[in-house]
Length: 318
Image (cartoon, rainbow, N blue to C red; front, side, top):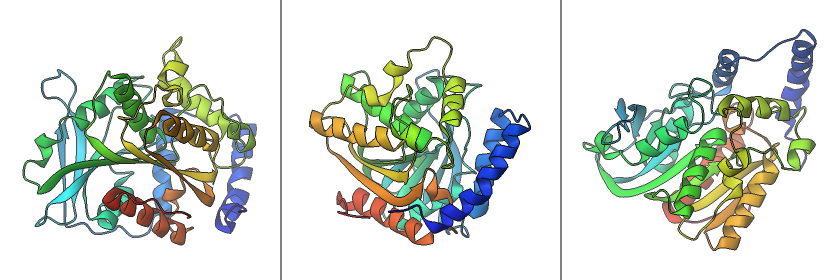
């Protein structure tokens, strides 16, 4: 499918502005990256109401670690429901509980499940693996914030981009036997999986398709300390094993990260792990932010997520 007309029009406006900024010597900073991602909230539809929302901290118990802020969304306070561990993206640098509030709300409302959105530390202030460790500690300390919430005891996870990288990194360590995970099913939305940047789609879609290969490299340079083994840190490198959570990968058709998503699912399947791939036709990386531009795709996205998490059903086509 060709690029969605709404995104074609958006890129026709955006790309000349990017080119002008480059000619003028613009140098990205963590602050500018965070502001840019927060600015995408301008494309969100009105906030979806959720019956109960509260902030808390978790992840510090019995670990000596820094407590991790979380936001809990309870769509049905009077009925037990499954729980979704929600990990925001943002290149390991941007995004927070407020920037992703729109998505956490929609996830809770569309699934009817409790959502716990986690706010790990970000680079470059916290380099790899500090944010990953925050995420893992929060995953294993959810009961501290859910004591008064009715749940079924069943846990799933949803994450996008760099947040999906963290879920995949946890799964990689589960496969190796280093870590454990209570996650049953997880959804990785346009995940970042290869810190070596070896995918063919980085060349095909690395310029002019919203997320550039140059920006991906810059994010990684801020995330890793000099000399870090980026291949060993990459979820794509494995290992893989049957005990990894059942995983649905949803990738945009015009995404520089497309190739690594496809290869990741193939490697999971080859290991005997349960993995599924859905390609969102005509979409760009981070398309879930653009609710007012592609509302039909957004509705379909959350339908697919809800059906997979609740029933384990993967739709045959978008």
